Image (cartoon, rainbow, N blue to C red; front, top):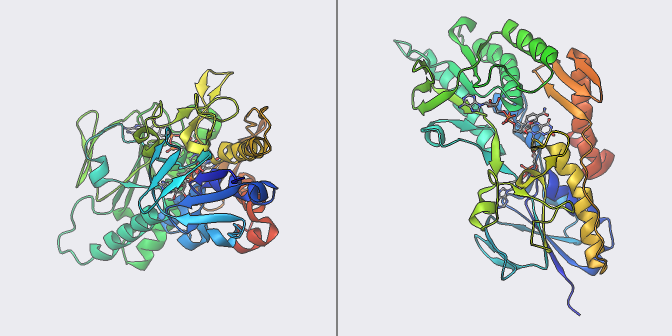
Length: 401
Ligand code: FAD
Ligand code: NAD
């Protein structure tokens, strides 16, 4: 009898952890497991604000997939997913077509532009190793070119971060560390550089603990960040951003961090979706599709206490990978009763650059150094779950304080 084919799309937090769980189980004997990803490496999206600012080398955030996944047990295909044909149970890749019996959709997300004109053309995004390398190189080029200009163009060293959600705040935090280094390196007075955090809502980090938000804003302001709160951006142009009140901020560097939507493959494959995310059943399958699991940023689950979707996070993607792997094992073994997924939110910790961070873990609020150490522990914990102590030692954040 032919073995069932399990195809995992995307080697992000969700996909890598499903593959890693399956390779440790009997599933790899009873089924043919294939992992597909557009790069031959896995990167940690949650670290990308650091290489984007230039405070960490991008290689630290990534690892070769075959250094963690045993390709004798799990086939790996480096290719880009174009579309899923649900009726034929096939996945169209750029260079091949794959059949599946069970599919895991874990292709992550893309930046949400809300259709705002000019974002695609003129703004940078913190999304992948390639996209953050570009931000770093672009900023360095602006600094390197500045002193070459007889007449310094206005806004050449203004860096606009659109959105003061967690990504925007973590990125400006890193910039407060990096900009003084760039000024020193390129002989530019610090007061020639503006760091602007532009947020549509009445506060930075809307919905987060107010005391911690105030702490974060005070720290960042003391390091030179200018907040423009209650200020939606309505257009991005080559030379800056147009605000809702029609004022214009000149800038050569605009980084767009106003939230995410599910990978476009979801909608292009005809799934019912909200902002590219499929509202999954409790066992993580797409409604009406007993053979398709959806995890990570492509999946939408509702917090029953608030009746609102959980924000897409690595924390949830990792937890979903356990349920998904268990359910795949059950199906391969011919069982019909599947595990129900229930998120267990441990908290949220955000870095502010250097040794500063804020967070809530359980009911405890964390500030400063201790929050920063907890953040590093969270980062290291993932590496431990994925590749054990050797991976922590190779790629982890070992300097705690
Ligand atoms: P991802 O980890 O994004 O992986 C998707 C994978 O799919 C990638 O390998 C990508 O290359 C691949 N892929 C995409 N399209 C294709 C295609 N067409 N074909 C083939 N392969 C494809 N969450 C937290 O819980 N804690 C944090 O501290 C935190 N910090 C963050 C910091 C930043 C700067 C950002 C941007 C996000 C942060 N998040 C955090 C959110 C978290 O990163 C995401 O929720 C998480 O990465 C989602 O995991 P995933 O497996 O769905 O997708
Ligand atoms: P987000 O939705 O958390 O924040 C986006 C921000 O952009 C919001 O504050 C929103 O009001 C603002 N915004 C929207 N449109 C705007 C406009 N036109 N002009 C100005 N501001 C605008 O999204 P994110 O920060 O990109 O994060 C994406 C996901 O990743 C979230 O689920 C987040 O929780 C998660 N994340 C978590 C961490 C962490 O836990 N440390 C860090 C980064 C990201």
